[in-house]
Length: 142
Ligand code: SDN
Image: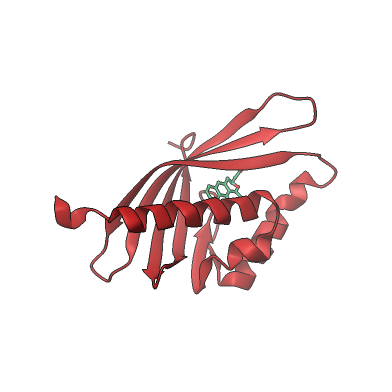
């Protein structure tokens, strides 16, 4: 079992990375979010959609997606828990994470939707973490 575990150091680097990455997304800083992917990174946030490819492609996809909230004073937050890391043969990490998207509007109550599982491949080198690929599955799509 030991060889399948990531070290505590790597685990905390990944937690720190995710905190910055997802705060960039929730702050609508899409360039900063895209910069947390490798140059050739891929990102699929919803089932059935074509994955966005490369950092400019990820920014474009997020700008497009968020147009649905134009004129809607919504704050979305992506909460990550249960980060499970498994080293891969090529030195990257498979990361499987539970994610809840929490939505709040002024004066309203937080709503949780969707409930997701995030399947990432992460590259970690010299203390730097980048997402090589991200596939998000949604629990309501069974
Ligand atoms: O980046 C993510 C996302 C994400 O970007 C999502 C987006 O809309 C833009 C990391 C982890 C999970 C997610 C989940 C989503 C949900 C998706 C669809 C929606 O909110 O309706």
